[in-house]
Amino acid sequence: MLHTVLNPCRIVLTTILLVWLVILVSCADDASEQVDLVHHDLPEILDEGVLTAITTYSSTSYFIYRGKPMGYEYELLDRLARHLNLNLEIIIARNLDSLPEMLHRGDGDIIAHGLTVTQERQKTLAFTHPHITTYQVLVQRKPDDWRDMKLHEINEQLVRNPLELAGKTVHVRRNSSYYQRLLNLEEEIGADIDIVAVSGDHETEELIRMVADGEIDYTVSDHNIASINKTYYTNIDIRTQLSFPQKIAWAVRKSSPLLLDTVNAWIDSMKETTDYYVIYNKYFENRKAFRRRQKSEFFSRTGNRISRYDSLIHTYADSIGWDWRLLASMVYQESQFDPDAESWAGARGLMQMMPSTAAEFGITDPLDPAASVKAGSRYIRYLQNLYEEVPDSAQRQMFVMASYNVGENHIADARRLAEKYGDDPRIWEENVEKYILLKSDPDYFNDEVVRYGYCRGEEPYNYVREILARYRHYTRFISADQVSSDDDS
Image (tube, rainbow, N blue to C red; front, side, top):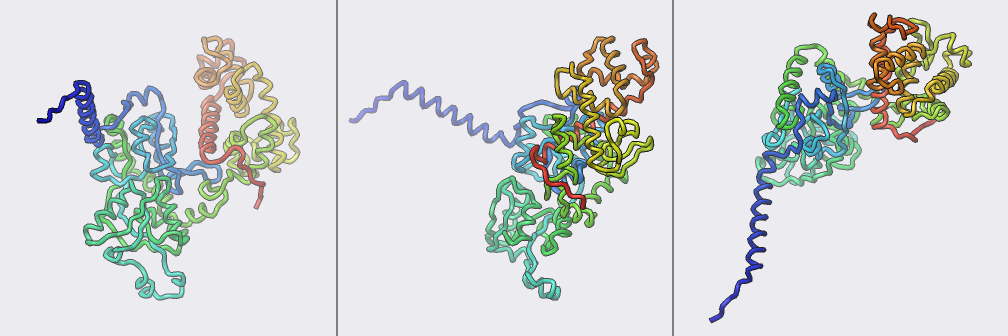
Protein backbone atom coordinates (compact mmCIF):
# COMPACT_ATOMS: atom_id res chain seq x y z
CA MET A 1 0.00 0.00 0.00
CA LEU A 2 1.28 3.43 -0.99
CA HIS A 3 1.14 6.06 1.72
CA THR A 4 1.38 9.78 0.99
CA VAL A 5 3.14 11.83 3.63
CA LEU A 6 1.79 15.39 3.83
CA ASN A 7 4.30 18.14 4.51
CA PRO A 8 2.97 20.46 7.28
CA CYS A 9 4.59 23.52 5.64
CA ARG A 10 2.91 22.72 2.36
CA ILE A 11 -0.45 22.40 4.14
CA VAL A 12 -0.02 25.84 5.71
CA LEU A 13 1.05 27.40 2.41
CA THR A 14 -1.88 25.83 0.57
CA THR A 15 -4.29 27.09 3.22
CA ILE A 16 -2.91 30.64 2.95
CA LEU A 17 -3.23 30.59 -0.85
CA LEU A 18 -6.83 29.37 -0.62
CA VAL A 19 -7.68 32.15 1.86
CA TRP A 20 -6.17 34.78 -0.44
CA LEU A 21 -8.06 33.33 -3.40
CA VAL A 22 -11.34 33.63 -1.49
CA ILE A 23 -10.47 37.22 -0.56
CA LEU A 24 -9.62 38.15 -4.15
CA VAL A 25 -12.83 36.61 -5.48
CA SER A 26 -14.81 38.41 -2.76
CA CYS A 27 -13.16 41.72 -3.63
CA ALA A 28 -13.90 41.21 -7.30
CA ASP A 29 -17.55 40.54 -6.47
CA ASP A 30 -17.75 43.62 -4.26
CA ALA A 31 -15.88 45.92 -6.65
CA SER A 32 -19.02 46.70 -8.58
CA GLU A 33 -20.78 47.71 -5.37
CA GLN A 34 -18.29 50.04 -3.70
CA VAL A 35 -15.09 51.47 -5.14
CA ASP A 36 -14.87 54.94 -3.60
CA LEU A 37 -11.37 55.48 -2.25
CA VAL A 38 -12.02 58.90 -0.68
CA HIS A 39 -14.69 60.64 1.35
CA HIS A 40 -14.99 64.17 0.04
CA ASP A 41 -18.55 65.39 0.27
CA LEU A 42 -20.04 68.89 0.20
CA PRO A 43 -18.72 70.05 3.63
CA GLU A 44 -15.12 69.30 2.61
CA ILE A 45 -15.66 70.98 -0.77
CA LEU A 46 -17.06 74.11 0.88
CA ASP A 47 -14.17 74.21 3.35
CA GLU A 48 -11.65 74.11 0.51
CA GLY A 49 -13.60 76.61 -1.58
CA VAL A 50 -13.11 74.68 -4.82
CA LEU A 51 -15.43 72.51 -6.89
CA THR A 52 -13.29 70.14 -8.94
CA ALA A 53 -15.08 68.76 -11.98
CA ILE A 54 -13.96 66.03 -14.35
CA THR A 55 -15.02 66.64 -17.93
CA THR A 56 -13.90 65.97 -21.47
CA TYR A 57 -12.31 68.05 -24.18
CA SER A 58 -14.82 68.09 -27.02
CA SER A 59 -16.58 70.51 -29.35
CA THR A 60 -19.64 70.54 -27.08
CA SER A 61 -18.33 69.93 -23.53
CA TYR A 62 -15.29 72.17 -23.01
CA PHE A 63 -12.95 74.06 -25.35
CA ILE A 64 -11.39 77.45 -26.12
CA TYR A 65 -12.80 79.62 -28.89
CA ARG A 66 -11.35 83.03 -29.73
CA GLY A 67 -9.66 83.16 -26.35
CA LYS A 68 -12.75 82.28 -24.33
CA PRO A 69 -13.44 79.02 -22.43
CA MET A 70 -16.74 77.61 -23.64
CA GLY A 71 -18.81 74.43 -23.77
CA TYR A 72 -22.10 73.02 -22.53
CA GLU A 73 -20.60 71.31 -19.50
CA TYR A 74 -18.27 74.24 -18.81
CA GLU A 75 -21.03 76.85 -18.78
CA LEU A 76 -23.24 74.77 -16.51
CA LEU A 77 -20.33 74.04 -14.18
CA ASP A 78 -19.44 77.72 -14.06
CA ARG A 79 -22.97 78.57 -12.97
CA LEU A 80 -23.03 75.74 -10.44
CA ALA A 81 -19.74 76.88 -8.90
CA ARG A 82 -20.96 80.47 -8.67
CA HIS A 83 -24.24 79.26 -7.13
CA LEU A 84 -22.20 77.49 -4.43
CA ASN A 85 -19.78 80.44 -4.11
CA LEU A 86 -16.88 78.18 -5.07
CA ASN A 87 -13.95 78.45 -7.42
CA LEU A 88 -14.14 76.02 -10.32
CA GLU A 89 -11.28 73.68 -11.18
CA ILE A 90 -11.52 71.66 -14.38
CA ILE A 91 -9.84 68.28 -14.75
CA ILE A 92 -9.79 66.87 -18.28
CA ALA A 93 -10.20 63.14 -18.78
CA ARG A 94 -8.07 62.25 -21.79
CA ASN A 95 -9.51 58.75 -21.78
CA LEU A 96 -13.28 58.41 -21.40
CA ASP A 97 -12.90 54.94 -19.94
CA SER A 98 -11.09 56.49 -16.97
CA LEU A 99 -13.94 58.78 -15.88
CA PRO A 100 -15.29 56.55 -13.07
CA GLU A 101 -11.80 55.63 -11.86
CA MET A 102 -10.80 59.31 -11.68
CA LEU A 103 -13.89 60.11 -9.65
CA HIS A 104 -13.48 57.22 -7.22
CA ARG A 105 -9.84 57.96 -6.46
CA GLY A 106 -10.67 61.62 -5.78
CA ASP A 107 -9.28 63.40 -8.84
CA GLY A 108 -12.53 65.35 -8.94
CA ASP A 109 -15.83 65.73 -7.13
CA ILE A 110 -18.22 65.34 -10.05
CA ILE A 111 -18.20 63.85 -13.54
CA ALA A 112 -19.59 66.60 -15.76
CA HIS A 113 -20.01 64.57 -18.90
CA GLY A 114 -23.09 63.32 -20.71
CA LEU A 115 -23.24 59.79 -19.34
CA THR A 116 -26.14 57.54 -20.23
CA VAL A 117 -27.76 56.31 -17.03
CA THR A 118 -27.59 52.50 -17.04
CA GLN A 119 -28.21 49.88 -14.37
CA GLU A 120 -24.59 48.73 -14.58
CA ARG A 121 -23.24 52.24 -14.04
CA GLN A 122 -25.63 52.85 -11.17
CA LYS A 123 -23.86 50.11 -9.24
CA THR A 124 -20.84 52.36 -8.75
CA LEU A 125 -22.00 55.90 -9.56
CA ALA A 126 -24.62 58.20 -8.06
CA PHE A 127 -26.29 59.96 -10.97
CA THR A 128 -27.74 63.44 -10.78
CA HIS A 129 -31.15 64.28 -12.12
CA PRO A 130 -30.89 64.02 -15.91
CA HIS A 131 -30.04 67.07 -17.99
CA ILE A 132 -31.70 65.69 -21.10
CA THR A 133 -33.14 62.55 -22.66
CA THR A 134 -31.96 61.37 -26.03
CA TYR A 135 -31.62 58.15 -27.99
CA GLN A 136 -28.88 56.30 -29.81
CA VAL A 137 -28.55 56.43 -33.58
CA LEU A 138 -26.42 54.67 -36.15
CA VAL A 139 -23.93 57.02 -37.82
CA GLN A 140 -23.21 55.94 -41.38
CA ARG A 141 -21.84 57.54 -44.53
CA LYS A 142 -24.07 58.45 -47.45
CA PRO A 143 -23.11 57.23 -50.94
CA ASP A 144 -20.38 59.27 -52.59
CA ASP A 145 -22.79 60.69 -55.18
CA TRP A 146 -25.65 61.21 -52.73
CA ARG A 147 -26.25 64.80 -53.87
CA ASP A 148 -27.25 63.50 -57.31
CA MET A 149 -29.49 60.75 -55.98
CA LYS A 150 -33.14 60.66 -55.01
CA LEU A 151 -34.04 60.01 -51.38
CA HIS A 152 -35.29 56.45 -51.95
CA GLU A 153 -32.10 55.64 -53.86
CA ILE A 154 -30.01 56.84 -50.91
CA ASN A 155 -32.11 54.85 -48.45
CA GLU A 156 -31.64 51.68 -50.48
CA GLN A 157 -27.88 51.89 -49.86
CA LEU A 158 -28.11 52.68 -46.13
CA VAL A 159 -28.92 50.60 -43.07
CA ARG A 160 -32.49 51.49 -42.20
CA ASN A 161 -33.42 48.45 -40.11
CA PRO A 162 -31.26 47.24 -37.21
CA LEU A 163 -31.62 43.73 -38.63
CA GLU A 164 -29.36 44.86 -41.46
CA LEU A 165 -26.48 45.34 -39.02
CA ALA A 166 -25.89 41.58 -38.98
CA GLY A 167 -22.30 41.03 -40.10
CA LYS A 168 -21.57 44.76 -40.30
CA THR A 169 -18.52 46.27 -38.57
CA VAL A 170 -19.36 48.98 -36.04
CA HIS A 171 -16.69 50.91 -34.07
CA VAL A 172 -17.54 52.09 -30.54
CA ARG A 173 -15.75 52.45 -27.21
CA ARG A 174 -15.94 49.29 -25.13
CA ASN A 175 -17.01 51.06 -21.90
CA SER A 176 -19.64 53.18 -23.61
CA SER A 177 -23.38 52.59 -23.42
CA TYR A 178 -23.22 52.15 -27.21
CA TYR A 179 -21.18 48.96 -26.83
CA GLN A 180 -23.71 47.45 -24.44
CA ARG A 181 -26.56 48.48 -26.74
CA LEU A 182 -24.94 46.64 -29.65
CA LEU A 183 -24.49 43.52 -27.53
CA ASN A 184 -28.18 43.65 -26.63
CA LEU A 185 -29.04 44.25 -30.28
CA GLU A 186 -27.19 41.09 -31.28
CA GLU A 187 -29.50 39.13 -28.99
CA GLU A 188 -32.57 40.93 -30.34
CA ILE A 189 -31.79 40.32 -34.00
CA GLY A 190 -30.37 36.83 -33.45
CA ALA A 191 -27.18 37.54 -35.35
CA ASP A 192 -23.61 38.69 -34.77
CA ILE A 193 -22.49 42.26 -35.29
CA ASP A 194 -18.76 42.80 -35.75
CA ILE A 195 -18.30 45.17 -32.82
CA VAL A 196 -14.84 46.74 -32.82
CA ALA A 197 -13.95 48.20 -29.43
CA VAL A 198 -11.82 51.34 -29.79
CA SER A 199 -9.75 52.90 -27.02
CA GLY A 200 -11.24 55.33 -24.55
CA ASP A 201 -9.29 58.29 -25.95
CA HIS A 202 -11.64 58.36 -28.93
CA GLU A 203 -14.46 60.84 -28.35
CA THR A 204 -17.76 60.06 -30.05
CA GLU A 205 -17.32 63.06 -32.33
CA GLU A 206 -13.91 61.71 -33.39
CA LEU A 207 -15.56 58.45 -34.46
CA ILE A 208 -18.20 60.48 -36.33
CA ARG A 209 -15.39 62.26 -38.18
CA MET A 210 -13.84 58.91 -39.05
CA VAL A 211 -17.13 57.77 -40.56
CA ALA A 212 -17.40 60.98 -42.56
CA ASP A 213 -13.81 60.63 -43.81
CA GLY A 214 -14.29 57.00 -44.81
CA GLU A 215 -11.91 55.55 -42.20
CA ILE A 216 -14.67 53.42 -40.67
CA ASP A 217 -18.16 52.55 -41.89
CA TYR A 218 -20.34 52.78 -38.80
CA THR A 219 -20.42 54.08 -35.25
CA VAL A 220 -23.15 54.84 -32.70
CA SER A 221 -23.89 58.19 -31.07
CA ASP A 222 -26.43 59.93 -28.92
CA HIS A 223 -28.76 61.75 -31.28
CA ASN A 224 -28.04 65.25 -29.95
CA ILE A 225 -24.28 64.81 -30.52
CA ALA A 226 -24.78 63.23 -33.93
CA SER A 227 -27.24 65.93 -34.97
CA ILE A 228 -24.96 68.89 -34.24
CA ASN A 229 -21.98 67.15 -35.90
CA LYS A 230 -24.08 66.47 -38.98
CA THR A 231 -24.20 70.21 -39.61
CA TYR A 232 -20.46 70.05 -40.32
CA TYR A 233 -20.16 66.54 -41.77
CA THR A 234 -22.98 66.78 -44.30
CA ASN A 235 -22.22 63.37 -45.82
CA ILE A 236 -23.27 61.39 -42.74
CA ASP A 237 -26.70 59.92 -42.07
CA ILE A 238 -28.14 59.65 -38.53
CA ARG A 239 -31.76 58.69 -39.20
CA THR A 240 -31.56 55.04 -38.08
CA GLN A 241 -32.58 54.82 -34.43
CA LEU A 242 -31.06 52.06 -32.31
CA SER A 243 -32.53 52.63 -28.83
CA PHE A 244 -35.46 53.95 -26.86
CA PRO A 245 -35.05 57.32 -25.11
CA GLN A 246 -32.36 57.32 -22.43
CA LYS A 247 -31.46 59.66 -19.59
CA ILE A 248 -28.21 61.65 -19.81
CA ALA A 249 -26.77 62.91 -16.53
CA TRP A 250 -23.71 63.85 -14.47
CA ALA A 251 -22.43 61.65 -11.64
CA VAL A 252 -20.85 61.87 -8.19
CA ARG A 253 -19.45 59.31 -5.79
CA LYS A 254 -21.96 57.27 -3.81
CA SER A 255 -20.16 58.54 -0.72
CA SER A 256 -21.15 62.14 -1.60
CA PRO A 257 -24.91 62.23 -0.87
CA LEU A 258 -24.92 65.87 0.27
CA LEU A 259 -23.23 67.00 -2.95
CA LEU A 260 -25.72 64.92 -4.95
CA ASP A 261 -28.72 66.48 -3.20
CA THR A 262 -27.30 69.98 -3.70
CA VAL A 263 -26.55 69.47 -7.38
CA ASN A 264 -30.00 67.96 -7.93
CA ALA A 265 -31.68 70.94 -6.27
CA TRP A 266 -29.62 73.29 -8.47
CA ILE A 267 -30.49 71.35 -11.64
CA ASP A 268 -34.19 71.46 -10.75
CA SER A 269 -34.06 75.22 -10.18
CA MET A 270 -31.99 75.83 -13.33
CA LYS A 271 -34.52 73.92 -15.43
CA GLU A 272 -37.06 76.56 -14.46
CA THR A 273 -34.93 79.29 -16.07
CA THR A 274 -34.59 80.30 -19.70
CA ASP A 275 -30.82 80.37 -19.29
CA TYR A 276 -30.69 76.58 -18.90
CA TYR A 277 -32.24 75.99 -22.31
CA VAL A 278 -30.33 78.83 -23.96
CA ILE A 279 -27.09 77.07 -22.99
CA TYR A 280 -28.28 73.77 -24.44
CA ASN A 281 -29.43 75.37 -27.68
CA LYS A 282 -26.14 77.25 -27.96
CA TYR A 283 -24.16 74.02 -28.25
CA PHE A 284 -26.61 71.46 -29.64
CA GLU A 285 -29.04 73.46 -31.79
CA ASN A 286 -27.14 76.48 -33.15
CA ARG A 287 -25.82 74.87 -36.30
CA LYS A 288 -24.39 78.03 -37.82
CA ALA A 289 -22.24 78.77 -34.76
CA PHE A 290 -21.06 75.15 -34.61
CA ARG A 291 -19.92 75.22 -38.24
CA ARG A 292 -18.19 78.54 -37.72
CA ARG A 293 -16.26 77.19 -34.73
CA GLN A 294 -15.29 73.99 -36.54
CA LYS A 295 -13.76 75.97 -39.41
CA SER A 296 -11.95 78.50 -37.22
CA GLU A 297 -8.22 78.39 -36.52
CA PHE A 298 -9.08 79.96 -33.15
CA PHE A 299 -11.09 76.89 -32.10
CA SER A 300 -8.89 74.74 -29.88
CA ARG A 301 -10.32 71.51 -31.32
CA THR A 302 -9.20 72.28 -34.86
CA GLY A 303 -6.58 75.03 -34.50
CA ASN A 304 -3.73 75.97 -32.18
CA ARG A 305 -4.22 79.71 -31.86
CA ILE A 306 -5.77 81.85 -29.16
CA SER A 307 -5.98 84.99 -31.28
CA ARG A 308 -4.62 86.53 -34.44
CA TYR A 309 -2.09 88.36 -32.28
CA ASP A 310 -0.41 85.30 -30.72
CA SER A 311 2.99 85.89 -32.31
CA LEU A 312 2.97 89.56 -31.34
CA ILE A 313 1.97 88.74 -27.76
CA HIS A 314 4.65 86.03 -27.59
CA THR A 315 7.35 88.50 -28.61
CA TYR A 316 6.52 91.02 -25.90
CA ALA A 317 5.82 88.35 -23.27
CA ASP A 318 9.42 87.22 -23.74
CA SER A 319 10.59 90.77 -23.12
CA ILE A 320 8.95 90.81 -19.67
CA GLY A 321 9.65 87.20 -18.78
CA TRP A 322 6.02 86.04 -18.85
CA ASP A 323 4.40 82.96 -20.31
CA TRP A 324 2.83 84.33 -23.48
CA ARG A 325 -0.46 82.61 -22.65
CA LEU A 326 -0.68 84.63 -19.42
CA LEU A 327 -0.17 87.88 -21.32
CA ALA A 328 -2.73 86.68 -23.88
CA SER A 329 -5.23 86.14 -21.08
CA MET A 330 -4.56 89.66 -19.87
CA VAL A 331 -5.07 91.08 -23.36
CA TYR A 332 -8.36 89.21 -23.61
CA GLN A 333 -9.41 90.63 -20.23
CA GLU A 334 -8.69 94.14 -21.48
CA SER A 335 -10.12 94.08 -24.99
CA GLN A 336 -11.16 90.54 -25.97
CA PHE A 337 -8.55 90.93 -28.73
CA ASP A 338 -10.44 93.82 -30.33
CA PRO A 339 -7.85 96.46 -31.36
CA ASP A 340 -10.61 99.05 -31.77
CA ALA A 341 -12.02 98.56 -28.26
CA GLU A 342 -12.64 101.69 -26.20
CA SER A 343 -13.81 101.81 -22.59
CA TRP A 344 -16.27 104.26 -21.07
CA ALA A 345 -13.29 105.96 -19.38
CA GLY A 346 -11.41 106.46 -22.65
CA ALA A 347 -8.92 103.58 -22.54
CA ARG A 348 -8.26 102.26 -26.04
CA GLY A 349 -6.69 99.44 -28.00
CA LEU A 350 -5.69 95.86 -27.27
CA MET A 351 -4.11 96.77 -23.94
CA GLN A 352 -6.73 99.42 -23.05
CA MET A 353 -4.30 102.09 -21.95
CA MET A 354 -5.45 105.55 -20.93
CA PRO A 355 -4.19 108.34 -23.25
CA SER A 356 -1.81 109.81 -20.64
CA THR A 357 -0.28 106.42 -19.79
CA ALA A 358 -0.12 105.49 -23.46
CA ALA A 359 1.83 108.63 -24.29
CA GLU A 360 4.19 108.04 -21.36
CA PHE A 361 5.05 104.57 -22.66
CA GLY A 362 5.36 105.42 -26.30
CA ILE A 363 1.96 104.91 -27.94
CA THR A 364 1.31 107.30 -30.80
CA ASP A 365 -1.53 105.26 -32.28
CA PRO A 366 -3.40 103.35 -29.53
CA LEU A 367 -5.40 101.41 -32.12
CA ASP A 368 -2.29 99.89 -33.68
CA PRO A 369 -2.01 96.37 -32.20
CA ALA A 370 1.79 96.23 -32.21
CA ALA A 371 2.13 99.66 -30.62
CA SER A 372 -0.47 98.85 -27.99
CA VAL A 373 1.11 95.55 -26.90
CA LYS A 374 4.57 97.11 -26.97
CA ALA A 375 3.53 100.00 -24.72
CA GLY A 376 1.52 97.70 -22.48
CA SER A 377 4.53 95.45 -21.95
CA ARG A 378 6.67 98.49 -21.15
CA TYR A 379 4.15 99.50 -18.52
CA ILE A 380 4.19 95.95 -17.11
CA ARG A 381 7.99 96.06 -16.93
CA TYR A 382 7.75 99.35 -15.03
CA LEU A 383 5.28 97.80 -12.58
CA GLN A 384 7.47 94.73 -12.14
CA ASN A 385 10.29 96.97 -10.97
CA LEU A 386 8.01 98.31 -8.23
CA TYR A 387 7.65 94.82 -6.77
CA GLU A 388 11.26 93.59 -6.92
CA GLU A 389 11.14 92.80 -3.19
CA VAL A 390 8.31 90.30 -3.76
CA PRO A 391 10.27 87.03 -3.80
CA ASP A 392 7.73 84.80 -5.52
CA SER A 393 7.45 85.50 -9.26
CA ALA A 394 3.84 84.30 -9.48
CA GLN A 395 2.81 86.62 -6.63
CA ARG A 396 4.75 89.45 -8.29
CA GLN A 397 2.73 88.94 -11.47
CA MET A 398 -0.49 89.22 -9.48
CA PHE A 399 0.62 92.56 -8.00
CA VAL A 400 1.48 93.75 -11.51
CA MET A 401 -1.91 92.72 -12.92
CA ALA A 402 -3.80 94.35 -10.06
CA SER A 403 -1.75 97.55 -10.46
CA TYR A 404 -2.35 97.55 -14.21
CA ASN A 405 -6.07 97.46 -13.51
CA VAL A 406 -6.50 99.90 -10.64
CA GLY A 407 -3.18 101.75 -10.35
CA GLU A 408 -0.12 101.22 -8.23
CA ASN A 409 -1.23 103.70 -5.53
CA HIS A 410 -4.32 101.77 -4.47
CA ILE A 411 -2.26 98.59 -4.32
CA ALA A 412 0.30 100.38 -2.14
CA ASP A 413 -2.55 101.32 0.22
CA ALA A 414 -3.70 97.69 0.37
CA ARG A 415 -0.14 96.55 1.15
CA ARG A 416 0.11 99.04 4.01
CA LEU A 417 -3.20 97.79 5.38
CA ALA A 418 -2.00 94.19 5.12
CA GLU A 419 1.15 95.00 7.07
CA LYS A 420 -0.79 96.93 9.72
CA TYR A 421 -3.24 94.09 10.33
CA GLY A 422 -0.67 91.30 10.40
CA ASP A 423 -0.78 89.92 6.88
CA ASP A 424 2.12 89.63 4.45
CA PRO A 425 2.38 92.67 2.11
CA ARG A 426 4.51 90.59 -0.27
CA ILE A 427 1.80 88.01 -0.94
CA TRP A 428 -1.26 88.85 -3.02
CA GLU A 429 -3.42 85.76 -2.54
CA GLU A 430 -5.37 85.74 0.74
CA ASN A 431 -3.26 88.63 1.99
CA VAL A 432 -3.13 91.91 0.07
CA GLU A 433 -6.14 90.94 -2.08
CA LYS A 434 -8.28 90.99 1.10
CA TYR A 435 -7.42 94.64 1.71
CA ILE A 436 -8.00 95.82 -1.83
CA LEU A 437 -11.55 94.55 -1.29
CA LEU A 438 -11.76 96.33 2.05
CA LYS A 439 -10.78 99.65 0.46
CA SER A 440 -14.46 100.11 -0.38
CA ASP A 441 -15.26 100.03 3.37
CA PRO A 442 -15.09 103.43 5.19
CA ASP A 443 -13.44 101.78 8.20
CA TYR A 444 -10.53 100.93 5.94
CA PHE A 445 -10.32 103.62 3.27
CA ASN A 446 -10.32 106.17 6.12
CA ASP A 447 -7.53 104.33 7.95
CA GLU A 448 -4.50 106.47 8.72
CA VAL A 449 -2.20 104.33 6.56
CA VAL A 450 -4.42 104.79 3.48
CA ARG A 451 -3.32 107.70 1.29
CA TYR A 452 -5.51 107.36 -1.79
CA GLY A 453 -8.97 106.83 -0.32
CA TYR A 454 -11.85 104.79 -1.66
CA CYS A 455 -11.33 102.04 -4.21
CA ARG A 456 -13.91 99.73 -5.77
CA GLY A 457 -11.76 96.78 -4.88
CA GLU A 458 -13.88 94.08 -6.50
CA GLU A 459 -12.55 95.17 -9.90
CA PRO A 460 -8.83 94.42 -9.36
CA TYR A 461 -9.68 91.43 -7.15
CA ASN A 462 -11.78 89.81 -9.89
CA TYR A 463 -9.46 91.08 -12.63
CA VAL A 464 -6.52 89.05 -11.30
CA ARG A 465 -8.59 85.96 -10.60
CA GLU A 466 -10.26 85.95 -14.01
CA ILE A 467 -6.96 86.36 -15.87
CA LEU A 468 -5.40 83.49 -13.94
CA ALA A 469 -8.43 81.25 -14.40
CA ARG A 470 -8.44 81.88 -18.15
CA TYR A 471 -4.69 81.31 -18.28
CA ARG A 472 -5.22 77.86 -16.73
CA HIS A 473 -7.75 77.12 -19.47
CA TYR A 474 -5.21 78.19 -22.11
CA THR A 475 -2.48 75.98 -20.68
CA ARG A 476 -4.73 72.91 -21.04
CA PHE A 477 -5.14 73.34 -24.79
CA ILE A 478 -2.37 75.57 -26.14
CA SER A 479 1.30 74.67 -25.91
CA ALA A 480 3.73 77.19 -24.44
CA ASP A 481 5.76 77.08 -27.66
CA GLN A 482 2.77 76.76 -30.02
CA VAL A 483 2.73 80.10 -31.83
CA SER A 484 1.67 80.75 -35.41
CA SER A 485 2.39 83.81 -37.47
CA ASP A 486 -0.06 86.63 -36.92
CA ASP A 487 -2.72 87.07 -39.54
CA ASP A 488 -5.05 90.02 -39.56
CA SER A 489 -7.42 88.37 -41.99
